[in-house]
Image 1 (tube, one colour):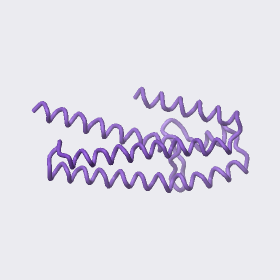
Image 2 (cartoon, one colour):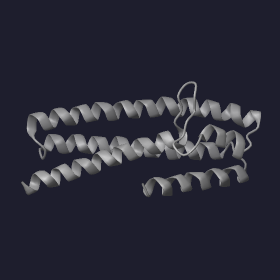
Image 3 (tube, helix red, strand yellow):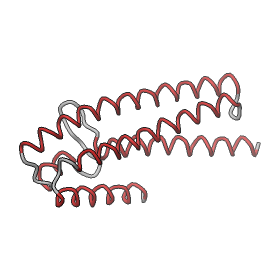
Length: 151
């Protein structure tokens, strides 16, 4: 019975980490096609208001945002598929099987990929923003990470 609770606890940690990775991507850079939203405020408004983007910067950011959204959607789809694989592996071989562990590893790799993609996207933005704009963006990113860690 103790092993069951350990496995359940482990799966809860995996789920929380997955949710955390998705939230980081959504909170900082996630957009729908028409509306840009952010859990603690509108990141698009941050770009336009706090960062005072000019038209050229906005145009360049729109291009890299489109590519980021495409790559992010692929990783999110991989997460959904891996979660379905995990459900099947648990159903067919139990909680602590090698098949379950292999899928959990795949989930971790995908979550890490999402986090790396998000950080790379922020790094790509640095080349478009001025030094002052980059400092403001970094402050907001760090602030949001601390806020999310406290939840």
